Length: 421
Image (cartoon, one colour):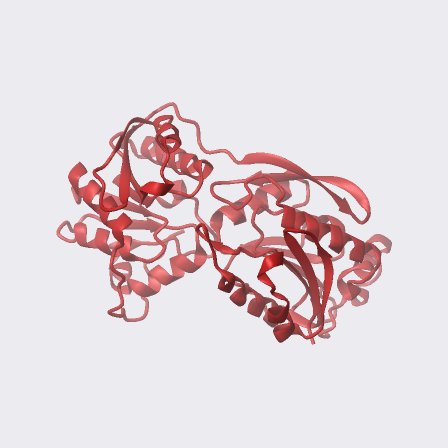
């Protein structure tokens, strides 16, 4: 769903395009026919610079719009705040609905002949993007749709050309600009199948019994359809605690109530909301492994998977469906740091957060997620948190929660639990 609702007044802080964005824009202009009057697609704009510059390119063509799509809820909201004027005027279209819109649905009805993007980090994500653009071209009858995707030369490989060549009839490199250049892919093939999720499986202990959970990975979701080692270590420790009855309201009591038909009051949250089931949250649900475990292991609880990334939301929903766990009381939301989750409303939060911004370790990425966990947990609720062992996050958790217990540790990862004071 898209929106052109009015936004706050713009600021003068529009970011300048970086070198990679400049080479994308130059290659697009060399391709020709900008603002013909046709719509233009901007994909994955993390700063707003590429969207703002594209709006300038089509400014003299009153019939042209810029459709800027990003899988990130936070980046979508930031673009809406950064460019309220074009959004209100209908010159800019963003996927600002509560539900994530796949790129091909977002662009339905558009007359787009150019799509501008940074090259995705993985080949799987690049193939997913190319296939979605081929679907858009087929549905709109635009066999002239061209993708201009830029990147830093040191991160570019011939495999990217091959991936695009499987979907487009022509792929060429642009002239370089400093250490950046772009790939220009045109002529989408008519016989290309739509993007399909990667499939996988994880075998984990669920209440002490080994169980196979189906995994699905769409687009650039972290881990694809594989179980990452940090999540597996967390689940090993968590399942031991579930079997031992250490999760209080959210653990043994809720499961027993579900099995023997105990009344709702037996499962009421400690906040006094009689009749409301306790809530377990997977914050940053990724491909849905942790969400699926919660749905399987804690049948007497509501389960919420939440992620900023639209691919993660779609992957988690697909994982739950494939595992037969998309039951009543299990929800997956496209949200930033649980902004739609009530304060002190959760009994359990699982967190396996990102620690990299691109290829660089960024230890600050977890700060807002820990703050969110502290906000939504009720007094006595538990956080279970896995992190890279060398990053030493225990003081950060102690500052927000108080008592912290190490549950597992290996060479790569550490699992901590904490109780909300």
